[in-house]
Length: 414
Ligand code: SF4
Image (cartoon, rainbow, N blue to C red; front, side, top):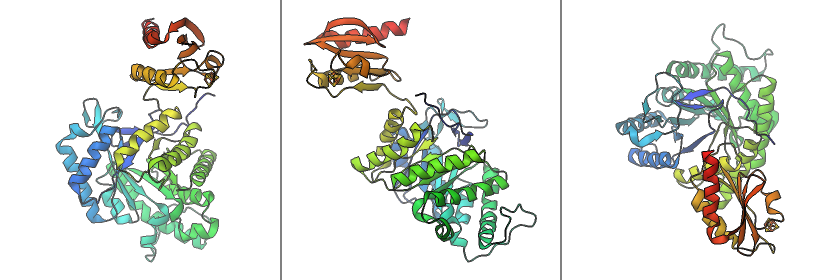
């Protein structure tokens, strides 16, 4: 039952480190045209206020890189409005503001190597999609640099493709090295290359292979500031592909951090449930270093859901955790009202686990690893628990919340 997070290498994304023992980071993506500078900056402001730690912006063309530059400039006019408060400035040379750093921007490029190179000079991280990345250069045969490490041993059509991909990626990796930019290799189920599709079909295996091909190119160029993601709108595929990737990485002693997300998850309850299942399943496995909940809603609405998933999977605790039973015939007090009152009184106690249970018959046993318990003991009576021990018995319901707070307070003083 002990939660063990898969230990990954740390990459520094604009002063907000990712991986290792750093908190699982929360990110979102703006949904306006990149040219809408004011709109972008306003969305970013709202997302940062909600708790976003990286912001991704679509950057498909060179013109968009220019807009991205302007967005960054605009943010830097009032950096105090865009501070990631718990971004640990663990790396030298970082601009820090009031104990935090200015929100790092991520360029979502997908296709064009030329654009990716320019974006890497502006953004803290660049996202490419290996399935799309070579497509735009497909008709251009780029000879491999003399003496460059060959990634394969046999001369097949696949070799030509990989050599081309290597040649296309090399200048990007050089730029990333020069500017300290992180690269996300983000493979999507819906955009695998024809070559991968021919060989593996649109399977988790195909997604893993497409990702590892690009990873090996990074390794051959001695570039390790990478983050990987395997996304799908099909939750089962996303989970299976990511687990498979971790297995393959373990076999090859790779420790690159992972970005988790369910693409096109939808909106409202549907989107939240799909994201919770996909991202949450992997988090409870100890997999994942940053998450994005993709909703068909404005970015700031994704953030509380992301933190909720992290809390529920106990991957990152940012608030009080509550355990409460549904109530049944054994419940002898107003359980729903009691839960509300206890939550209001203890919402500031980040990290504590507090149970509100309907009866002393099953409540104490069922409240699992709660630190404190508020358990119905009879009509209008409550027992207060500290761990598994009833420290106050038969407290009148009206004063039970206050007594619970006293018990928590006295424990804190000890
Ligand atoms: S803990 Fe008690 S009151 Fe709550 S559901 Fe279980 S049996 Fe019913």
